[in-house]
Image 1 (tube, rainbow, N blue to C red):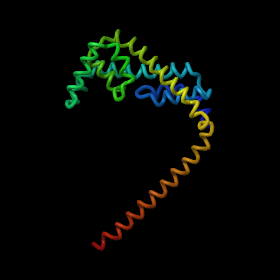
Image 2 (cartoon, rainbow, N blue to C red):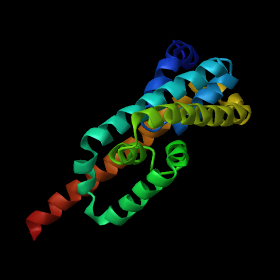
Image 3 (cartoon, rainbow, N blue to C red):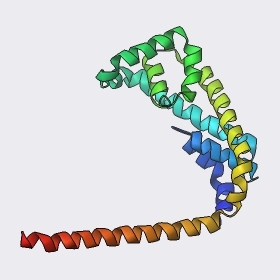
Image 4 (cartoon, rainbow, N blue to C red):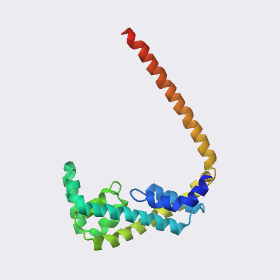
Length: 192
């Protein structure tokens, strides 16, 4: 079974799972796969949006339940946490949707939102909207990027074999050097 048939067969499930917590890289690759005709563009968007929405919903609920205890552990960041929580209260729509696009906030953002006690009836629709916007944007970027990456991906099996052999050769060289240094150190230590 080659890589293309694996992507076609398990791609959507991998996209849902991969986008649960992080997702940008997975989403971009989903867009590339859609460009190559291995996956359907709109199903990639839906899969990634679903995974992102579920992941953020779970983190939000954890923040509502355990947020106070979790945030107390970050004593050094107390001022930043308070500032973020004030922003959540002032501009919940902007913060909930924007959290997906803020580097470093992908996991902590929904926890903070949940801990701030933002009502679920506000969070859920914003989470869905944010997931759709985020998914559509990154899938489109991957699809457009597929124009550049596409020709290389068609020969991925051949490239993969070369990379595996290269990594094995480098690993062998590193292992031999480590073994030789260790042997030399053992020889040198009885003389000391």
